[in-house]
Image (cartoon, rainbow, N blue to C red; front, side, top):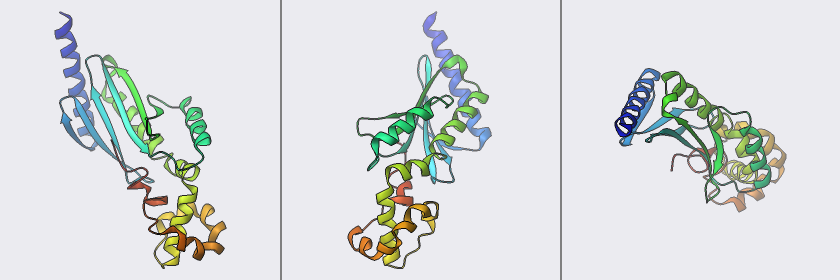
Amino acid sequence: MGEPRTHDRAAAARAVIEQALKEAGLEWETPADGTFVVTLPGTRKLSTTCSLAVGAHSLSVNAFVVRNPDENHAAVHRWLLERNTRMYGVSYAIDRLGDIYLAGRLPLGAVTAEEIDRILGSVLENADGAFNTLLEMGFATAIRREYAWRTSRGESTRNLDAFTHLTRRDEGAGADAGADAGAGAGTGADADADAGGGQE
């Protein structure tokens, strides 16, 4: 009796999630039965990839936020832990490489369209909404080098505008820093592709 009921709950949760994603107009794929990989469009990150995995008894939520910070680890981790106390449905976590994720779990009986909407909203708020703050805290040196590298070559720094307070203080040393920066791509606002690019 227990196994059929478990199967029914999982099937019902999968149906609820699929319908909720359709109604929200989100893009997703199902690489495995019961797993939904959802793309959440953002404003600071280009997008956040969130995995919703239906298990026998619970729904697991996982989303990549940003790679292991280059610096200031203690302050970054303290900020994450303090933020965890105010978050809904998910919490920050780190993997063995130090990369930062959002993770959560809820019982299958709690899976409703409204709850999926709230969970995805929380993921977006705490991945996309916190992205620039995490870059400032953990990648400030890389952002300054990226800015110097671009300005020394006359390239656009438009997508670094959010970090003006970090880059302006070093403008006088821009040429020297640019010489040392090399191919500075993959830092600063380019972290969408490197620091905060996607789901593992």
